[in-house]
Length: 596
View 1 (cartoon, rainbow, N blue to C red):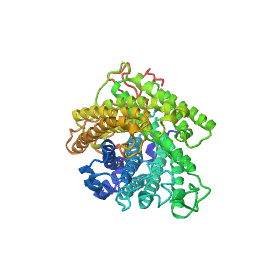
View 2: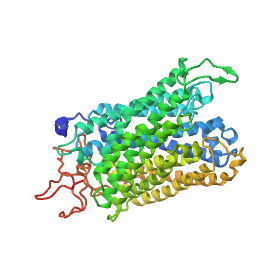
View 3: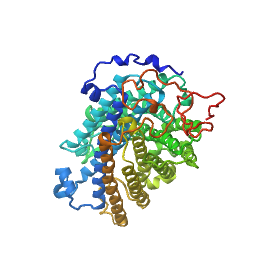
View 4: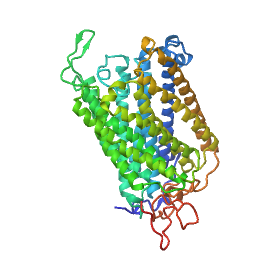
């Protein structure tokens, strides 16, 4: 199965045409440049998403109080600085969409799958450089359409990021249900096309272009994670596309897939026979695998960084691979736990409860294996390692509340409260962001040939970690007190007066954490141009990407591609002078390859 990448390579890559600025930096087919494009586009979208979250947090903490920021940024949607109720829901909707799809799916997976798959498996480039370029530009186009939707006169989509009908299916339902919702659907259709092209490319590259000796059991765990993530994407994203297309039919062509017995101001609409619950099934069939499309790349990155910076072999390599495969399979049969209060048959609810609790087992395997790898390791506490350990922490704390939400009897009590917000932000949002930050700190030298400032990295980690828990830990308690999510103010309900102070504390942590991301942005963009120049292998790592020259070239390696003789985790192996042995170093006489 292990193909010789050289046969697919451009052996005469010295005879490439002279690259212009446009072919090198804009319409590039080089996977390393496309990775940078994904990263920078995802970062810009992330800034927009975080700014939105700060704005609606300020609204919840200080409702009906005039705010200069609202007046400046929202214009007519904040008359005299007081946020309009409609725009609050629109901000929540677009924030969720941007962070889940544009930052954590495309920004994380697009960046590191593109950067690492060819370099770590020993390939000259992706299977199709052209398709790779097209997938990035479709992602860029979908980002532009999503941003344009913010400036529609009637307002952007405001049906929540899950866009449940009938709010999303009836253009007359509310302001954001008109052109704003249409642009949301167009943007997501383009995004799904981008995602599918990228995923197919990653799968074909891993299967066909591995260098000599790179068997599947010698692949780094990062590549296993990206490979399986791409498979989940190919299986589940088309289902969301079908839901979006059926929704467009309901909105524009008079069909009734998701609508039935609708009354508006006493007038009966002509829709009949459809069901909004059908939309929920289609949405969550992508929506739950999406959690792992976001998480698995972050977990793969963490595996690599923890092993490298513990100077130890990763604990239980085969168990880690099996847990990735088990998560991929189970993630496609648990979607119903989002729908326990949709009138679902209680027996079906118990089936989804069982599969949901089952997925905790491979997740726990990963957490235990990280902890065991760290145990008694020679830990190198650089910023990438800190963010990786932070991911293990948030993955465990967020995962524990998932056991409560996965149980149908318990979920009913806290469904659609801030308890749910706290859970999925910790287990998916913050964990995946930590994985993304860890990956940036670790592979920045490979991407840009320079090092990030370590001290600014430490500052970035500690403030981010404290503020993340400061925001989401108290949310569990206001959720258990019954505070519903998506309400733009709770001041009309005396029942929730006791949660007002907690919301102020949460918002202050959110503002401080958001502002301190500027430290990271400064470090990132400054270091691209003025950072300290890197050495060939700054982390003394085993994987193949560190054998490629620092100066980027199309084709990755001059001359022959290195062959692989061992797995990726020969750290501190007895009998070797150094505490790392790169994969391209042959086994010496009598040396045993580690059983993993």
